[in-house]
Image (cartoon, rainbow, N blue to C red; front, side):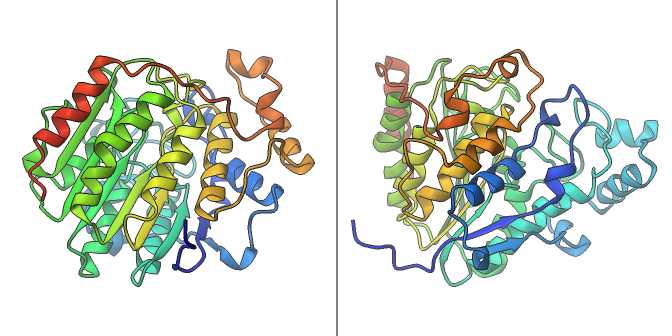
Length: 376
């Protein structure tokens, strides 16, 4: 494969994620972005000249999608560390597992600022990895699914503002990217593609749901394996993207489709994510890769660090460096799986492949998506 002619990839991170948590007992009590960043550095993969600290998005940027009253309510919740009954009911702040926590405004504003900066940096082409992004459930006027702002929508909107008119959003999270799909429903400029677990919250994203022609959904059964994911990508997703010939692609890499994740029941290894990114990266001159879900710090950190290696054509060694192993051994994971972690969570980045048979329902999803596609 010839060298990628684009500038070397840029990494956007932030120290806000290191100290910020949604609170004890919440699935997002774990360190994820900081673990990814620390692993990349510990593997010797990050030229600091290509690291950019994410800024906080401005009110004007956030209100390109979000309601000003909702934004004001987030700021009130952060300032008071409490929420009124009115704000809880109207904006779902402090409700539905969307807790009030110390950085309830600053953290999502930083996620939005990072992805919107990435979109601007990609105006003339290139690749950006921004693992702090990916909050794909956020609604214009309320919190949803641990997401207070919808940074993928804001990044796609930033591209549209730059004059791009042909975009693809690919969502690999175990949960359907409902907030992004709904934001661009019926908009011919954005095609939203989502591979997600069928029958899981938010219980949207049926295969028949085309969102006015702007979406393709792949609701997969429990136990999705690497072979099936590869088949879906090669048989349906990559042809859909290639046929579209987009100017830019945004990939949401929520790591809750990994087998070790506690909030889903899919069975991918991180090889599936890395293969998907390697396949997609050359299908558009602009590529933005963000994070998303993922609630096991070992599996999330290793997966997202490996994505950075793939984007830079770096070989992933069989064993982590001593510094990277130290990062992984320093993690705390207060679930049953974290009490006695398997040795490979410390010593390797690459999971053992999880291959298997391609079930008939996977084949039907791929065939249906292509047969019903209206994109030429």
